[in-house]
Amino acid sequence: MNTIFRKSMLSVAGLAFAGGVFAGPIAAHANPVDAKPVAAAVQNTAPKPQGDQSHISLNDEQTANVKAIIAATKKAGLPERAAVISIATSLQESKLENLGHLGDANDHDSLGLFQQRPSSGWGTPEQITDPAYSTTAFLKGLKQVDGWQDMPLTEAAQTVQVSAYPDAYAQWEQQATDLVAQHWNS
Image (cartoon, rainbow, N blue to C red):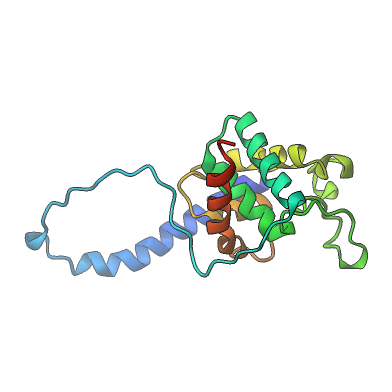
């Protein structure tokens, strides 16, 4: 079974169990007589950024990489939310720098904007240090995550990346959102 799919299914099962554990006691104390219908507006907006947000100033190379990620996202026919997730992921993994082999400081054989590993099947070193290719590879993984459009950014990114620090992606959501807003139509 595909590792991404298996982890997704385990996450869904865990969330369903946790929801039942916490919602069960709350629902048991609800008073249906006092319940009032509530009009709910349907919004097509992404979830709000979670937790404390980080921000870095970008140089020309990093800005070019933002534009490359956006171009690859558009070419894949995906919406702005996919670009936000991709840019936030790259901010966490490489600070939007196309990293080559870092010697002893390297995490295994991780390379490029997304710190993808040739040994894990992401592509050759030449491919994954190409911003368009590495973004397309990341987006291919993202498209395999059911419901990625509506889940918290860090959950979507983690399902693709399988990082040792799964919550770290969330801190970059606001900057990624701002960068996509700034460069999507340029």
